[in-house]
Length: 297
Length: 236
Image (cartoon, rainbow over all chains, first blue to last red; front, top):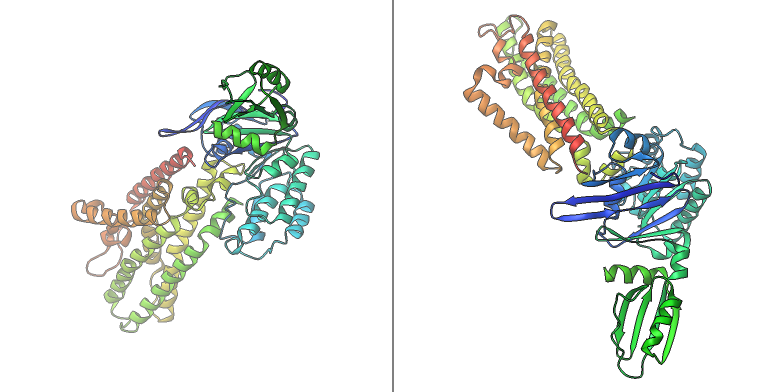
C-alpha cells in the first residue's frame, strides 16, 4: 500500500445476490486533499464507504485505509479511531438528547477538541437538552457534522454532508472542510451537489454501476476536457466513438459534438481530415463531465 | 460509555416493566393478605405461589421487551452505520448490551419480590426471606433462557415489530411443547417453582435445584454466544 494514500482499494467487489453494487473498484485517495466521490443514487458510493469502514464486508478484493487493512477486523477497528464519519441519512440515536449524543461520541476519541465542540454548538445553535428525535433533518445533519468536526482525525469521510442544510449552513460546512484540510486532515466526501464539489475538491472520482469511471484532479478535468463542435456543409459524416481521446460522439444533422477527455488539440487535428466547415472548442464544466460520463455508461 | 447507550436505549421499557411488575405484586399481595388470617399458613404460601405464576407471565413479557433492540434492530431504524463507525468491536457492542440487560433482568426479579416481602411484613405476616430468595433465583435463572432467546431473535431479525412477535411466539410454543410432552423439563414448571412446591403446605421445599439452574444458564449462554456470532457476521 502506498504511503501517500489515505485510501487505496484493489478490485473491490460487493455483490448482493444478482446485483454487483461495487465492481472491481480501484480507488486511490491522496492524503491531505479533498476528494469528491460522485455518482448517481445507487451507484455504489455508500456501499464503498461502508466497506472501507468495516460496516459491510467486501465480496472480493482488498483495500486499506490509513495503512490498515479493511478486511482485518482489529486493524479496521484501530483505523476507525483516526477516522470521522458522517453517515448518509444522518440518523442518530433518537432516545438521546443532543448533550447525551455529544458526550457519548466524545468518549471514544482521544482527538476530541472541547473548544471546537463549544464553538460548533454555538455556530450550529444546537439545543443541548432537546431529544434527537425532536430535531429537524437540518439540525440532525448539523449534529452529525459536529460529531465529526469536533475532532482532528486523520481522515474525514462525509456521505452527502450538505443534504438537508440551508445555504448558510452549507457555506459554513464548506469552510469547515477547507479549514480541516489546511490542518492536515484528508477529506473524502460523496455528494450530489456538483457546485460544492467544484468549489472545494482537489480530486474527483466518478462512480457508476459500481465502476470507477473517472479518477482525476479537478484541475486536470478543467484543463483536459473539451467540447469540440464540428459543422459540415452537408450531413455530418459518421465518426467512430473509438476516435482517440474522445469519450463521446453526438451527431445532430450537420453538426457533430465530441467530448474529448484529453489532447483536445490532437483530436482537432485528426478531425481536419473530415473537412468540417468550422471547428469550435469550448471548455467543459464538471457538471457536464459527470452527466456525459454516467449517461454514456 | 457503551453501557450508557444500552441503558438509555432500554430505559423506558425497563422502567415501565419494573413499575408494572412492582405495582402488580404489591397490590395483588396486599389485597389478598387482607382476606387471609395469619394462622392460615398454607393459604398464605399458596398466595405466594399464585403470585409467582402471575408474575412470571408479566416478567417474561418484560424480559422479552428489554431484550429487543440492539445493532440489528438499529439497521432498521438507520443508526447501525453510526454505531459501527465507533472504534469498538461488534462483540463489545453486543456484550455491553447483554451485560446491562442481565442486570435489568435481575432487578426485574428482585424488586417485585422485595415489595412482596415488605407488604407481608407490613401486614404482620412476614414471608420467610429464604422463600423469597428461592422464588427470585428460580425466576431469574429460568427466565434467563427467555432473555437470551429474545437477544438471539433480535440479533437475527431486523424488524421493529417482527422480532418481538417472533420472540413471543417462541415463548408460547416452548411452553406448549415442553408442558405437553416434556413435562419433566418444563421451563415454566421450573421458573414458577411448580416442581419444588409441597402440595400440602405450598412452601418451596428441598434443596435448591443447582443442576436445573446450571442447565438454564448453560442454554442461555449458548444462545448469547450464538447471538454474538450472528451480529459479527451480519451484513449492515
